[in-house]
Image (cartoon, rainbow over all chains, first blue to last red; front, side):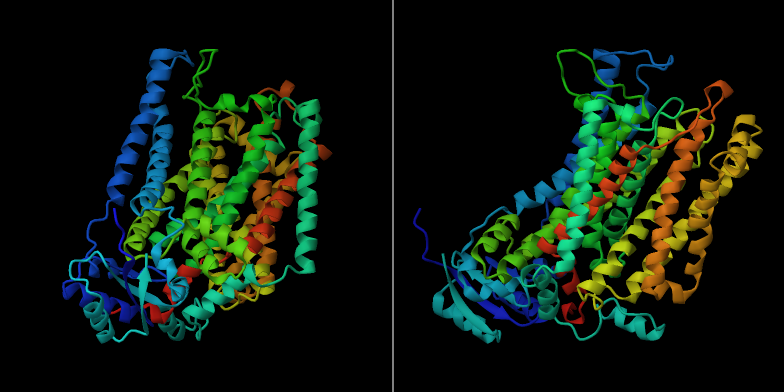
Length: 178
Length: 457
């Protein structure tokens, strides 16, 4: 596959408010493949760039269910089937005693799925990424806000997109080499 | 969120962040501690002492492995001595970190943002110290892995009807989730450090550790969801951990152990001692690193209030224990309380009441809640008190059980002390290292507290 030498066009903003407004306008103007970068989570920003479907909760739910089942079935299989021990005359299937470990395993699996699910869905770890080619982008982890229109967008045309972004009154605009 | 500024003027409370900070100053101030500030002589001295104590612990453990648990003060009837005592003490201390990072997040207590990072680190290190003890006290420590259910050639499995097994799962889950919570919280800040440093090697290390985080809106969205869910999972988890620890005792029939008040009273005690440790760490850290703008009087006061509240729950627990020993009509239970008040360990019991119930009452007075030196002292007293509480529960309950013929006394040896003090050294040494290599305050969460972070639709 031949790669486009240009990854996208990036505009830099001073404030969170400016970024949110710019993202909304860009999305409304018909740009589909855009992304926004900020030094902290901004409520509503993901929705502005057209991100509506967060799969993390489903991943966690599935992880938790698998964990709970694993915990309970493991104890059941060990205590009832594979290695039954008579402990003080208690039934082999002493379900109240199994609750604690079932609970802990639910939390353990759900927690691990939450973290690794988030990383996987975000495509991390990814130490290299084209946006890092923009020198000013290092402030994205400090006090600057960036909006990018990817060159893969249907509406992307170098001159038009640049003009469009300029109209949003950014601090600077740069082309992102890929 | 300018809310905290509003409330600060209305009821004259200190703000969560001193006014005048911007995204830039918050970032620079916190990352400078790691990136540009040279390690002082004081740091080397502190770290050196802590490290030596930790080495003392390794020596004591090495000797233990050579000789066996006979070098300790444990005997029958007191088979659970310092090891279990310190395990319970340390794991309790860890609880405050999770409470701050998870429960206060769910309750939208934004003031937690400046203390959650090092409180989580504290949790992690405290759980590491706690983890030392169960592994070394089992007599044949090289077989500690037998605690886990794994397929083996002996064709045996653990016994899941025992609270000790539940404890293995509770504590190892707690350690795992705490580590995940702490590390994922660090990812955006590691990216900040990567972008701030000029040194190539540091850029590489922080860059790899941050997984290439770039702050994309989609990433933040999933990250926030994950963080909130993890907090929601950690909340019942942290409450379960000390509950399960208390089951180790409450499921037994020893008088002084066999009581239903234990789970809530253990959890309250855990948070009580944990906040005491948070304060004992926060007070010198904010002073030495000049972080008074971020860890303000408000944080100290709020932590003191949590301490006061949980301390009262602990006091209620003591009261109920005494009441039930009379009300139950069980002569062994009644003797337990009589023995605490008049027996050979009575001085410890009175010291416990003074440390945990009497002295912390000064926190009702605002002046004491906002005075760092007074708070530091009260926190120390609480930590001593909570240690004594576990001493009373474990040693004093065991040393006088049902048969007078099996009564005995407990005398900790120098190896017991060396191991215990060594874990304090290990804890502090890890804390010293943490302060130098990772941001001790969550930078990205501090940014969200600034008024400029507010976005209108």
